Image (tube, rainbow, N blue to C red; front, side, top):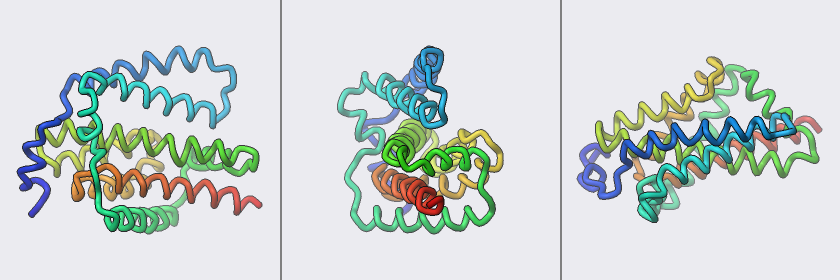
Length: 217
């Protein structure tokens, strides 16, 4: 049975509403612009941390009217352990294959931060924990949930994957990230849970940060 044919998914009592998407799109720049203006340090790591913290706060604001129902609506539902393992292994294989095509400038700049030993812990916190959490909750949670409730899980999978890649802005980076986005989206669609893609995303980013540090040494 496909995800689109699953009546439990199609009749989800906790759908993401359009007002949640609008609230997020309004809250993010309202939080980000003054925060950037007030930020004294303009390092890459500080800017990334500021962006993702603002994104997390905007997400909380967007779904807060739903109360605790926001968690299952975003996809924070139980998942089988084997799907988490499969998702992680698959993400690493896709990432390794994509890395053979080159390393975008944005990735180089981010990993340059990780090559500073004193910033390893902070780099892991931002790039391997905070960034995947926000990206998965926004693209495979908020956006996926809204689209799936209107046009089905197949459209949600494709739309969230494409927009996830486009959000990386740099064309080369977007193209290289798209296969990962499709894989993460497939996991979300197949398991009806955010956990497999979230864990896979975190492990993938964490290994990239650690590898950058070790290679530099």
